[in-house]
Figure 1 (cartoon, rainbow, N blue to C red):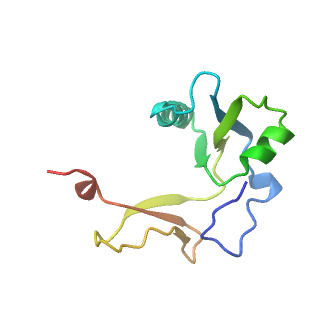
Figure 2 (cartoon, rainbow, N blue to C red):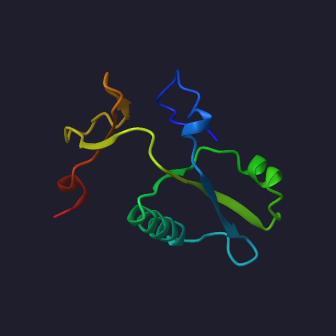
Length: 129
């Protein structure tokens, strides 16, 4: 897996900061090659449920599916789609709205106080009226 691509100088969490569990979400290609939107619905349900228990999560798409399948001995009919990391936060994360422009910067960053800032498009930009 690759951690936080925008943090070029960071090699990922230290051993004591790493997630305590990972879920590999796969599609069974014997049933279908397209899960439509079910993958997102599953991840949303798990992350919301975990959040209610005080467990934080991170949906990871930057990983090598072949390597994950080999290391975990996942049968070939299952294709890994996402890795869901679960654990307890080692840092403070704040979501902020972007400035609303078409070229708004969406890159996350850390403040000098080590707060992880994650810019998101404001709700008014996501709803077409």
